[in-house]
Structures are given as structure tokens and as C-alpha cells.
Length: 278
Length: 278
DNA sequence: GCCGCTCGTCCAGCATACTGAACAGATGGC
DNA sequence: GCCATCTGTTCAGTATGCTGGACGAGCGGC
Image 1 (cartoon, each protein chain N blue to C red):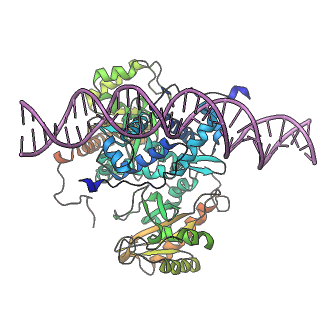
Image 2 (cartoon, each protein chain N blue to C red):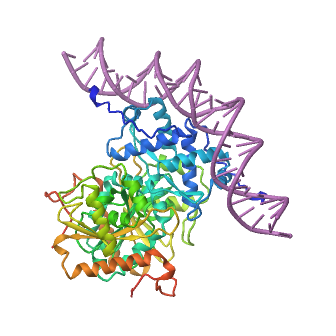
Image 3 (tube, rainbow over the protein chains, first blue to last red):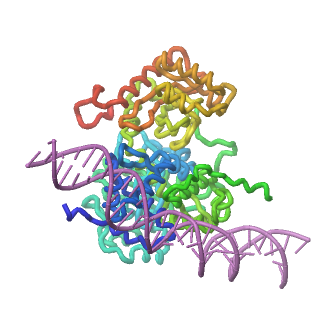
């Protein structure tokens, strides 16, 4: 099947000064997409359009440091990624406080609350608080979703300066759509972002999953250069009643205030603020 | 301060065929250990005993693929690690089933249950079920702990063939100790492992944290070459009563049976077995 | 405000990691 | 049982990534 040789042009191969590292990143991306496949050097070389022996050398080095593991003759993601991923999450103060803060939310503690960070036009989900609801529709930690159809994403995008927003939307024509409600045009997105700015929170009205709504607020980064964060509450549309939603919005703003700047918020003078416990 | 130049000899620099990748792994390790520091190329070069310009090139490549991010002029772990770490965890069937299985445990669902994988003589924690207990002493996902003082580790070690066990303990003199109860000699460990084999479960009796006990059972890997997994239940020693512990052990064995081989276990004929829900 | 320190970046030359083809083993099909 | 085709691995030659030193910028201090 000669047509299957779809060389992933990998346009960003703008000769880096450490090509082996750049290629290692491409290999990890491919392995992340092909779960349960364990592709070997040949398969990887075909998908990436790179020399086979080069791939083999890099894979062996990756296996030695634990970033990938050998499955028979092929490769899969390795356990050091769990270690480093955990270390990355632990290095973000907002993630640490998120878990404690969620538990003390009045209404929101029963729902699914998530924390994500904006990266270009995508959100990476960093933390999740599982409420009592049996909804299993929440995305796993580390998952990426388009910012344009999620409450977290729209809350984060709305916080950007207009110039920065223009830059990111410059060469974008169609937005990715997951449901019939997904915003598909830049114009519709801009109008929605303006609404977000005015009312102070974002809403995903069945734009990601049918029957599910999300409310989101922005959380600023603490260090310069850190993309804006955002928190959201996810619930079945049937549960989003006129009396519950305002309470959830309040909880989100409370959460955002606490995660924004720990010094400015009322916090217990004691060393530990895990809330009420017997 | 000339004495601070502690070159991390990094003995395993047995010239790999892709040295840039091996060094990238070393850089990630250093960054994982130095949270909130954001060391620059010079600092990294000093700690690793490697040329400064080489480190700078590799760091730039790592930043381009998102494995590290720039903090001012220095570097820290990047958000792609959360993505890849999540993908790694999602690729392990046991992790997926662990979360569902824990919720249906009779007694154990109220306690802290963890899943870990053995790697040489250390355990990497992959998943955690938070019970109702307010104990905050559980380790985060991705954390590594010595196998010799944890219930998960001893359960996993006890499952190894004697020859393999001998190999791993060959050049080990003193075991790492966290508390006064930690096993410190290979002889004491071997005796404990024999006990684990006879009674079918492992116990960490305040060997990791004072006042906290753990019970652990082994969970075999499904694919060849996968290190053994193990599940554990953590609780305050005061809660480990004579009536609760046998129930918890039963739950652990149930959990192990379900995670061992999904085909051999009674499972609902429907597509989804998330247990009782209204 | 000047100096000494250390930072991150740049550049030329050499050693070396990458390339491409040939190799041997495993596998499936007519 | 044989061939065709795949796999992963090996090897020599060369392009090229790595090295060490030099450069300019940014601080902190007697």
C-alpha cells in the first residue's frame, strides 16, 4: 500500500541544534497517539518520515532513561513519564491548592471541578476534583481540548489582551467542532468572548459533549510567561437549574480568588486549611 | 564556593548512540528535583558536569517540544509532561480498571487505595483512590518510594522468582530507612518476603510513615516484560482493628483478581460496569 | 559610577552522531 | 518447504552536532 506512506512532514524540523531531542519529542507524540500498538523502529520511521536507524538509536536512548519501555520488539511510553508528569504538576502551586480549595466549596464540591492551562489555542487539563455525581464524562489529567469550545478555554482566551488574541486567531479559518453547538467561526467566538468579559465567567453550552454544560473562570498565572489558567465546573444540563447555577458561579469566583494570590485571601492562620474534619 | 561543584558523575554516560537524548533525560531529572528554582544553562551544566553550550542547545530543543518551559532565563518542567504522563497512565489497562474497581469495594472504598508498579527496587505510584478519610498522607501520582519499606513494594518483590530477587539484591548493603520500623538489612527483608509469600499479602507496619500502616497485594502484569504491579490500602494504625483488617485484605484480593485478568472475572454483561448508580 | 563577577549566547574546528545500504532472523502465503 | 517480505540490527563514511573559548549584557559591592 504505497499510498499509506503519509510522511508526517513535521514542518517544524527547522533544523534544531539538537535534532535528536526534537525527534525524540516527535517519537513520544506518536507513541502517545498509538496506545496499545507498540510500534517498532520501522513503523515509527515510516510515520515520521525519518531514517530507520536514527529512530532506533533514539529509541534505545529513550528506553535507557525510562521515557519509553520496550514491549517485545516495539516501544511504548515509559513509567518515567508518570514521574516527570507528577513532578510537573507538583511544581504548579495552583494545582496543589486546587484540591484543598475544591473540598471547601459550598455547592461546587459535589460537582466535577477541573483546572486547566491555556497553550496557544488548546487547554491542557491539570487537575480534577470528582464530585459525588456518577458522571464519568470528565477528561483525564493531561488531556488536551480545543480552547474554543470549552468553558476553561473561553475563560482563558477572554483574559488575553486583544493584540495577543488577534495574533493567535490570525491564520485560523475554521474552529474544531465536537457537537452541533460548537462555535465554528472566529466571529462567533469573538462575540462569545466579549460576553465572557462582561459577565465574568464563560459557559460551554453543550459545545464539547451533548447534554453537558460547563462554567469556567480565569485564574491568572503567578509567574510571568505562564499562560493563563482556568477552572470549570461540569454538570449534566438537567442539573443546571436556575437556583444551582448562580451558586456554582459564586464558588468558581471564590476558587479563582483563592488560587490567584494566596496572600490576598483570607486563610486560616494555622498551617493547614483542609476545612472541616471531625 | 568551590566545594559546591559536586559533579554528578552520571556514571551511566556509557556513550549512548544518541547522547543528546541521554543528556536530555538527565536534565529532566535535575529539573524534577529542583522545583521552583528554574536553573539556567550554567547551573545545569555545573550540576551535570557537562559543557554549557551543549546543555543550552538541548534545553532549547526541549523547550520547543514543550517538555520544559522557560521561566525568565531558566528552565522548568513543561506541560507536555502532563500530557505524556496522562497518556502513559491511560495506556495501562490496570490503571483504568483500578478506579472503577475501587469504588465497588465493600470496605476498602472508604480508605485510601493505591496502585504502583515495581522498577528495580523502587515503586512508582500510578493511581490513587481517595476514601472518605481525611488522611492527606498519601503520596502523589508519579512519586517513587523504596520497595523495601512499602506494602506495595514488598508484595511485588515477593512475587519475583528467587533468582531475580537475588540479582536485584546482589550489590545492596543497607536499605533506605524512613522510620525506626523500616527494614534495614537484606536478611530482615528476605524473612519478611517469605512471610508475605506464605500469608498472601504484605504489610507495612509504620515502616514508611509513623502511625500509618499499609496492606498490599501483588497484581501480575499482562504483557511480558511488564514489572509486577501491586495495590495497597493505607490507613492510620488506630483504624487497623482486628475486625476491619481481614475485610480489607479480602477487598485487596478481590481487587487483585479483577485487575489480573478481566476475562476470568465475573463482570456485568452490559458494556459499562460502573456499579450501582441511580 | 566603576569594577568584577556571572550570566546566556555566539562562532569556528574537530570529533562524532547520523545516514543509507546491506545483513540475518522471523513471519506468512501460495 | 520455499520464497517473498517484513522485521530489527550492524557497519563504514561523511555531513554535522558538539565543544571550548570569546563576546556582550546584567547585577551586586567595596
